[in-house]
Image 1: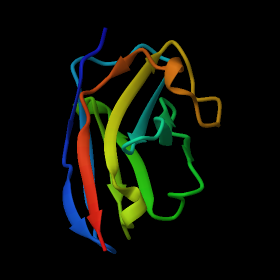
Image 2: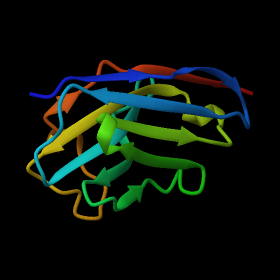
Image 3: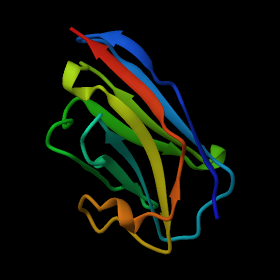
Length: 126
């Protein structure tokens, strides 16, 4: 099972930017879907964006136009560029990977993913 480690969380003010990265221990079997989820205190885990092995992406409405998911295949690394951050973006952010599955052009529930990172905290102050 692939191991995932996130980097890049931190504290910023409203309107600021952060770039999260997720390093995978191995390459995933194709097809695959990789995603970023977040979980705020007292709330469920929600998917903010995913990317399939062919590069197609899907975003939650709340982050469209502000967040960009991408990956560097040669580095086995997933990224999440977050711009124009808002206090409601405050959460623990998790990287997830699902092998032998595509993203199917839609947001996927947490149970669809077999591998998870430990999370990285993002805090946005007003």
